[in-house]
Every structure is written in structure tokens, then in C-alpha cells.
Length: 375
Length: 89
Image (cartoon, rainbow over all chains, first blue to last red; front, side, top):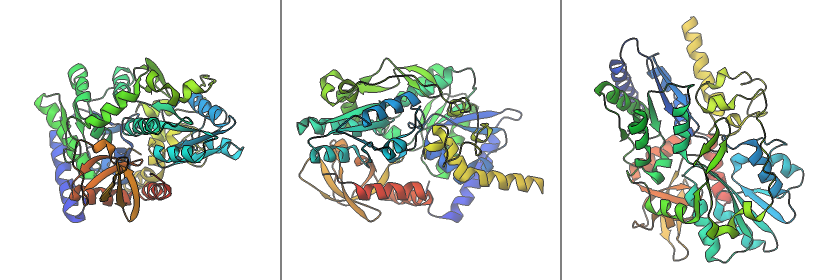
């Protein structure tokens, strides 16, 4: 599936659209979930839902690791950042995530030494350059970034660094999907599986979805044709009575994932018994923490954390958006009190959040469709 | 972001699992330690995420992914700017 020839691809998209329509049983509605921010982006930007029959709905799931960090954990991170002689380093998308008492951005404005980095290896460099400070890396993300944090800890150990640690907030995608499947709010018929996360974990971990929950899952590439083809593959399975994990993104995703990446994650980190996810509540074995053997690189052990649970603001419906129960525009504060400039919840703050994606792209397509159907 | 960005390997360095890459004209060092089970050679394309190469990809896939990423506008240019600022060694 190549997006290099626009004309040919428009034809292919029409062809796939027709095949999808043919595979749909008359009178039956289908709901497919995609969990990856990159997929949501493609879907909204290219108005992919226009290529699908009205009976097929796509919902966006909790694929945004920034979006699911509860406010209390943001407060914990800020508590670390405001300690004397600490430099907090973080990816840019954390800067505006609202905690109970403001964001990293607010804390930085108030004098905390918080610096944006591209890579945890940059944090390591900052630690080497500032031996009299303690440098903490705010480690967030799914399995795509966990190996990078783990490799950085291993490097810190090899360098005998004593002033570096990570505040580990890595979450794992499988328990989130499982929690959604267990939730009574949602009846799903299949999944469009994440792309780059799967280069790390491979396709095998998704097998429980087809075995235990009897839902098809197809890991998809990021181009519009990839997603349309994956939807067709899911429908093929439904029509043929199959229930399997299939890989549409074979050109990038190996079935077994990246063995070295899985090895380093397992060397440095272990699963927490449970972790709180914004909007989804406590999920068991859904997040990673630093192992005892690497305790000297674990910010949670080095610093005293308030560890207070903070309830989301009443107006915020991020939880339901994250579960795919609500579409962004169905949230009461979408676009009014909650915008990218004045976000109330993380779905709007993060570039991967469903609300941010819709705000930036989807609204215009939707308005055009509404206009067209009125005319 | 979920997405890895494609970069072309310019040179594999002796130190610490590092390689010099070109990502849309930005030349930087990244860590290729996660690809230790594979042969990484100059000219190869890899998917890079936060300073680490996650997997090798072929040139066609790299080209297609770049087209898509450029279409994303801000999110991609932000990532490139961040890479430009990085000082991996």
C-alpha cells in the first residue's frame, strides 16, 4: 500500500470501499476500535469514514499514553521537579498536561528546572554535564518507548552515573484493550491494531483478544489504504466466521517483535500489580516499574512522592472518550471550555489525543459533510 | 508520538551502539543497540523513535512513511526540531 501516486490510490480507495460495503451484512452495525494516535490522525485527516458505509463506525481507544496519566501522577512528577537541585527532563507532550495544581509548564514558569528533551539519552547527557544536580527523566509511553528508557538506564549503569533516575510511567497496551473489552459500555466487533508498538511486542500478545474475546484484530500501517485494507480484512474474518490476529503491516511489523527490545524491558523493569489509568480506573498488570536491581535509577524510590489520587474535574469526560464511548464532539466541553489552548483534559492536550486530532482535522471534514447533506 | 520516523544510516560508529543518521536532512547520532541481532550498514533505513532505532525498514516503506509524516505537518516538524536539539553521544 503506497501513498505515492494519488490518482491510483484514489481508485484503490474506491475499490476497497466497495469491497467493504459488499462484506457488510444488511441491517447489521459494526464498531471497530483503533488504539493508535497515528491511525486516528490518518482517519480524521483523510476523512476515511467517508469511505465506509454508515453502518461501520470507528472508535478511538486509549492509545495515547500521555492521555491516560492520572492527574495525581503529574502532581508527583512536579513534586520531584520542585525539589532543590533536581532537573526534570521530559518529552514535549507532557508540558501542558494538567495535574491537580497545574502543569509542568506552570511549574517551570514558577521556577522549577524542567527541560524538554528529544530522547532519554539527552537526559543522560544533562546528568553528565551537571554532576551536582540530580537529573530525572519522565518516562512515559507504551512499549514503543519503554525499551529506550530501559536502554538508557543500562547506559547510566555502565557509566556509573549516580545522579540520574527515571520516573517510570510506562503503560502496556494489552491490559488497556482488555479493560475495554471487559467494560459493559461498549460492544466492539474488531480491532485495528497499533503499528509501531507492534514492532516491539510483535503480534502474539494480541492473540488473547481473538481466543478469549472472539474479536478479530488486524495490525495496520498508517496510510489511508492500509487502514481501509485492514478494515476489509476484519470484515473478511467476520464473514468467514474466523477470529484471528492478522498482520496487514508485514512490511514493518515482525510477528515476533523485537527480541532485544523485549529483553531490555524485562531486564530493567517489571509489571506493577496495578496502576491507575485516567478514565479507566485501576487496571492490574498494566504498567511498568523499575526492578529492585536498578533501584538507584528509580525516582520513586529516591524521592518522597505525595502519591495523592486526584479526581478529574467534573466537566471532564476524557474517560469516556478514551474508552471510545463518546466521540470527541460529544463531550460537553469539547471546543468550548476545552480547546488545545485551554485544555481541561489530556485528550485535548496531547498530539495523540482523540480530541486534539479531531479539533485540528476532523471538524472541517464533518462540517463539509453536514453542509453537503443539507444542500 | 506512536510513530517512528525513518532515517538513513550514514555511518556506524565504534562507540556505545551509536550510528550517524540522516532524518529529512537533519544529521544526528542515534542509538542502534536495539538492532544488535541484525546487520546495520550505511545506506540502510531504520525507524527511529526518541533517539533509538526500533527496526530496519526498506527504502520504499521509508519513502512512503516520510510522505505521510510530512502530511502531518506540525507534529512532524516538532519532532524534527526536537531531534535537531538532541545531543546524543
